[in-house]
Amino acid sequence: MKISILQKLFIFSCIILAGNSLLGYAVYKSNQKLHVSEKWVQHTEQVISQSGNILLLTLDIETASRGFVISNDSLFLEPLNTAQKTIFANIGQLMQLTQDNPAQQRRIDSLNFYMKKRLGFSLKTIELRKKQGLASAIAYSSTKEGKYYTDCIRQITNAIQQEETSLLKQRKQTNEHSMAVFNQFSVVMFVLMAVFTILLLILIGNYWIESIEKEKRVAEFVIINKELAFQNKEKIKQEVANKELEAFSYSVSHDLRAPLRHISGYVDLLIKNSSTQLDEIGLRYLNTISESSHEMGNLIDALLTFSRLSRTELKRVKINSKTMVAHILKTFGDELSNRNIEINQKDLPDIMGDESLINQVWVNLISNALKYSRNQEKSVIDIGGIIENGNVNFYVRDNGVGFDMKYLDKLYGVFQRLHKAKDFEGIGIGLANVNRIVARHGGRCWAEGEVNKGATFFFSIPNNYNH
Amino acid sequence: MYTEVKKILIVDDSPRDVELTIAALNEKNLANEVVVAEDGEEALDYLYKRGRFVNENGLPAIILLDIKMPKINGIEVLKDIRSNPKFSFIPVIMVTSSHEEKDLVESYKLGANSYVVKPVDITQFIDAIKSLGQYWAIINKTPSEHL
Image 1 (cartoon, each protein chain N blue to C red):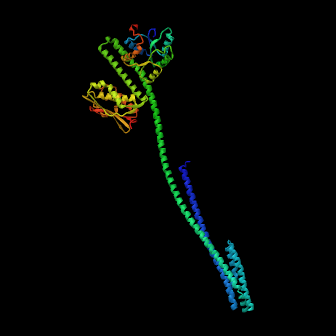
Image 2: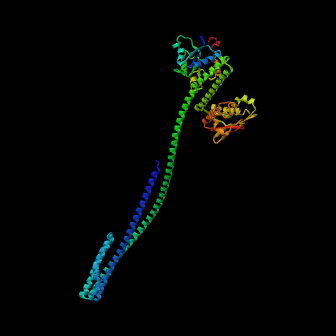
Image 3: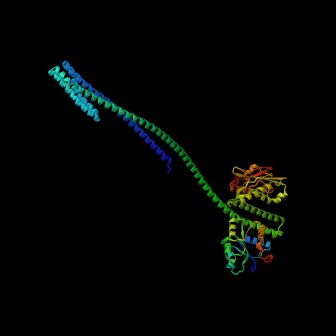
């Protein structure tokens, strides 16, 4: 299962929230514990001081009775009276303080018991002193019963205090332990939270970058879609244009050629059969009509060939350029042997292309080079090809009449000529055909030239063959 | 071989083209008896001896068949000729106004023997007719006095 970045963000946020809650709860708990342990310290102090008080009061009682026995002065009895009033209240308070501790309660019960005994003993001694005199009071005291009670009370209060002290110690230890645990826990939690926060930040960063990229992609997608729609439209337009061109060329070839053929045919028949009845001027007119109709026929044929170049499907095969050029040069054999011509055939890489169409390109360029250099004393023609930037750039260079570079854009146009028909025959379709064929192969045509210095015609074909 | 008079059947809806074709044949002394059918329907009428050809007899030695014609076009006529054993052996030369490949490919698929493109120049047309020498060899090279 793949978790989306948004789901990750949500999960990490939840983890951090949970972690922080836990940490907060732990702090709260720890504070509470601290508070409780402070209370326990106070409580212990209270118990200790209370039991101390009780012991002091016990001693007050003892001292008061002893003082009265010796002096018979009731002034000595005052602390006893005070102690008698408060001592059991004090014991009651201690009882309340140690409510939760049965062992202490038992101790306090016995404290209470001995206290009553102690007080009873003191009161009895005082009564004996008052009624029977010093001797009987001393005799009663010397039974050491009173001392026994006091010792018991001292022991009990000590035990109570010790118990509380040890309890406090225990509690302090427990507290210290839980504080240490809490400290460790908070360190671990802090580190964890820090890690998760960093991860969350990284995730947010990633999400941010991703959404920026997404936006970019969406924008690109929109652009691509627009382009595709545009291309589609263009394609449909192109198809419609092709269909129209097809219909047009069909009608040109059939409908226009017929009357032309009739004009030409009947003029020829007229020349053949009735020439004796015509004077020289009439005959010249007829010849001119005949020539003109031939010319028009050639133009129509050229136009049809040109339009066919756009319509026929390319049959791409491996073309051995060297063999092809050599073969074409052979077909110009007569012209080559009758003229002073130097042909330099350089390297010609193989390509993938439509054999008959590429052959037309070479025939056009080579025949042009021969034609436009025929007035030179010696024609020099270079033919070659260079592999460059994934293309094979072929060229045919001649030292002929050349052309003015300012008419470069007219060079490849249909029926465009840069030379007079009386100087160089032709109808101006050759380079247009070359351009169309090369474009259909995904290449392009260009040329360089200078008047009376020669011209170089280039064409590139994508290099699908040489690697 | 056929014992009937060797006739040439020209199937063309344009009387001018017919006239020029006959002139071209004349030029080469090839003007046997020429039968003209003005469209595909007439061509089939001639072959099947019906309509205005109901009293005709014999079959042409060769057929010059224009492709673009009203009613039944040359391709359809060719289809009919090649599907009937009675005249499927007759050489058929397709005559076209251009080198339109579509028509030619289909014609050859259907069994056309050859084709000529009507050139603007009548002498070229005569040459084209002449280039079909192997077909003319099967008909009598009689002088033009027949016409």
